[in-house]
Amino acid sequence: MSFRYEIRLSGAGGQGLILIGKIIAEAAAIYEDKNATQSQSYGPEARGGASRSEVIISDSDIDYPKATNIDLLLAMTQEAADKYSNEIKPGGTIVMDSGFVHEAPEGDFKSHGFPITNIAEEQIGKKIVANLVALGIITELSGIISDDAVINAIRARVPKGTEEMNINAFRAGQNLIRSS
Amino acid sequence: MNPRTSMMQGNIAVAEGAIAAGCRFFAGYPITPSTEIAEHLARSLPLLGGRFMQMEDEIAAMGAVIGASLGGMKSMTATSGPGFSLKQENIGYASITETPVVIVNVMRGGPSTGIPTLPSQGDVMQARWGTHGDHPIIVLTPAGVREAFDMTVQAFNFSERFRVPVILLLDEIIGHVHEKVTLPDPEDLVVIDRKKPTVPPEEYLPFEIDETMVPAMANFGEGYRYHVTGLVHDQTGFPTMDEVKIEMMLNRLHGKLDKYADEIIQVEETGTEDAEIGIICYGSSARSARQAMRELRDEGIPVGMLRIKTMWPFPTDRIRAFADRVSHLVVPELNLGQIAHEVEHASCDRAEVVRVNRITGDPIHPEEIVQKIKECR
Image: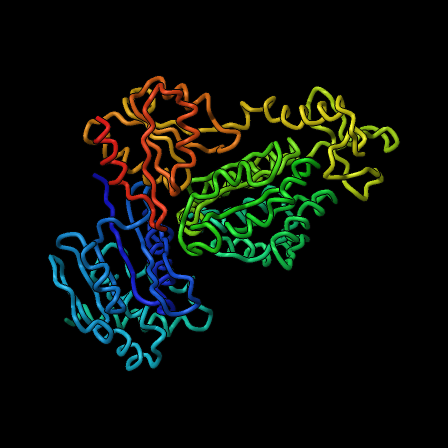
């Protein structure tokens, strides 16, 4: 059986979930020698509304590019946590922004809650890099892509001049797991 | 790492394919989920000496690409359902004037404004019969990012070679998914340009009937003056009411695609040799089907699939031959069974046609196909 790892990044439009989906996929497929797809689903609103981004990582061809049996779910809103936690596979992982998810869903999965957006504001000084903090947590918990690959992908994807701030946010996310 | 390898979105692959095929004119009006094609070409074409025009609406955009093509530019427009509806009248004009153009439709949920951001395959019949009257058309439908690139090149080649509008039908999933692709070296691509007249201007018949069935096309501005009209015309391009000339013209218009049908009609067969149950699929539904087939084969159930790459002209003969060898043909589609109906016609009761449909904006889950096939046994 070939290796397939499914990540769903869910929350609201404007939280940068599509961007970190692209970074994870590029880290795996371009900066490492795996296969990956990234797809997205959002509503007609320009901002706000439910948004989700999915990344499939595999060592072989990826036919169906959507998540069916989630290894890792990131929930940045209560709505996302409620809606998608039942699609996590047994023994999978949920990462929640505890600043928004006040009632953690229960199930056969490992649960990690951090005030992700608050940490971005307090440690980096900007709420908008909460997605990169989440990326650090995901990288550390999943263990399927290397730090170097992710950092290379961050540098290639974020706006010029913001690389260090984004990488610091990513490190802050990693440290949450390393120190816990 | 190969510098031509990247994570690329289907829509961007279409834009890159157009550039590689020699497209230097794009006119359009932005609409989800096709907008990335326009965005990419708005940035890229001016750097290549080409032109990008955002028009006031989709009708004007379709007119602009026809005009640009008559002027000698390989031209493309891109849209989604509501815009595709608006383009239909001018698609008929391109068809009767035999103007090479490529129209991309990234399908979203319909009818009308529908479900703008979610996938659908609801326009497969409109792509064939959206404009009025019997008319020739070629419709290609990719199932992945690399194929979106290749088929865009092919769409231009077919349109130039056969002087016919070619529609590239993607669905939102194929348009928006990012996949790892390695694009071919431009030197390895086959790029076909329209046949030019070899006679002096005074002897040029713009719609001449010869054994190739495809008349030579002079570009406006090269010294050849001729008449272009949506009225049925004779070999000179002027309107005619002569029934012999009408018949000759329309027979050639349709006959040119019949003559080259073997080249135009393409399918991909996987596991069809030993299959007991078949799947007929296309676009993103083929991705669901391939995963379902893989799971079923792992369980020892011999399933094969025929993926439609050329939607129109329809691969009736290939599907009929497959129907002869299997008990059932399962047809997953993100619509209420538009192609299943064509498959029934092709199958002629040789195999039972079973539908798997979804119109809620969700893709078809591979497990739905797996279950349906197990019920067939």
